[in-house]
Amino acid sequence: MKIDKNSARAARQLMRACVDQSGRLQQPRVRAVVKRLSEEKPRGYLRILAGFERLLRLEVEKRHALIESAAPLGTALREKIRADLQAKFGTDLDFEFTENPGLLGGLRVQVGSNVWDGSVLAKLEALRNSLS
Image (cartoon, rainbow, N blue to C red; front, side):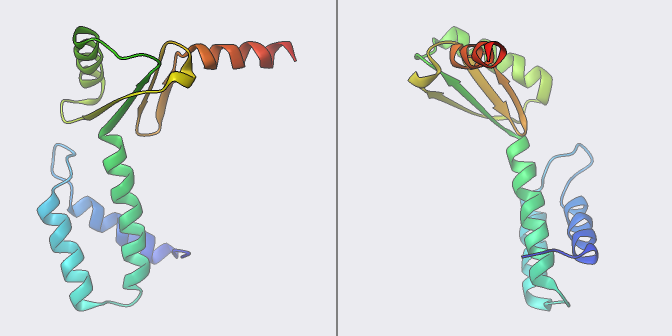
């Protein structure tokens, strides 16, 4: 669904209303906003809800860290990674550690739209691209 300028603006205003002064998303406010929109059904409310949902998804992704490794990580290394990411992005991150043997070695870390790829696979692909 294409979102027009007015709906996008309304969605951004709703998003600002759902974030507290520290920049954290307040779930009770989100629920209240969605409930009120669905009850009142203002003009273009479906487009507003679509834009609001997109903004919410992006905000939630910013608070989620996905750490992929080729082999299982030890507890000490997990805690070091967790501490480093919390220092950079804040203490309210959710962490997901997964194994991906296709990486061959190293780590791939994604927090929101930020990706750090230190895997052997990425380095081999970069080398292949530089030689071709």
